[in-house]
Picture 1 (tube, helix red, strand yellow):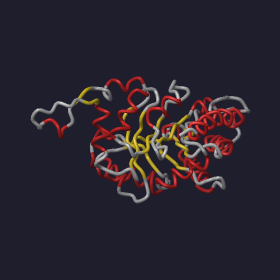
Picture 2 (cartoon, helix red, strand yellow):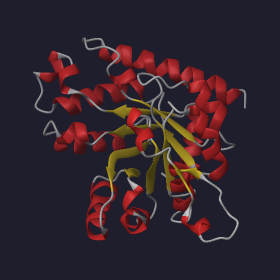
Picture 3 (tube, helix red, strand yellow):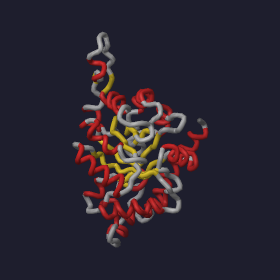
Picture 4 (cartoon, helix red, strand yellow):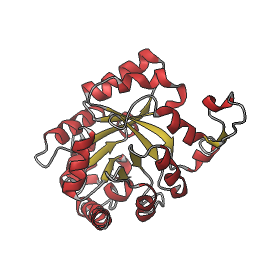
Length: 284
């Protein structure tokens, strides 16, 4: 899905909701966990059917499939999303990969070609050559970690720094936070057509500053709901003329209930967010 198709989907559904498919086996109802060969897929399938008219994107976190011997469930989930009559939807592999060139090539092939995700989250810490393979696959996206929603983000991501290009310029001392320097540097690697940034909803005061650095890029924003982020703050700080944001909710939707009514509760949670999004879109 290219940028314009994503924008069109947002406008059509009046939603910029991304549902995180992070199924915790301990929180899946026993009727699903015990009665199916692929319980992660069955759980996902029911969640997808309950929410796909409300969401424009789905984001499986790969850890939940690696730790539960669920790779086949991940493959089946992707096939189901790609063939769903209510699609297409934007698909994100939340893998946080990136390594030396040869390794990144294999990661890119796995997620963007073999599994055929639209996008994959990547860690830019090792620099351009580690991210480049993800950007070289036509029609696909790299979503670069910038400012994450976890408490430990403050250990490094908000440290003051001087970007390299300014360090040797006489009379220049424009300090910025590390995550801002990451975004500014990564703008040179790709474009608004194949690069997004991860920015946590739990730090709304930082979103406006990043929007000034990257006015045309999409942001993937986790942290709304269970982690305490507020949708209205996110929209006020960084929505642009093309909307430009995908707001992710995982636990708050898929594990809204641990009982057999989990699909009903998931739909209710997704619907509440979508209705808020619709009102915000209508007023802009």
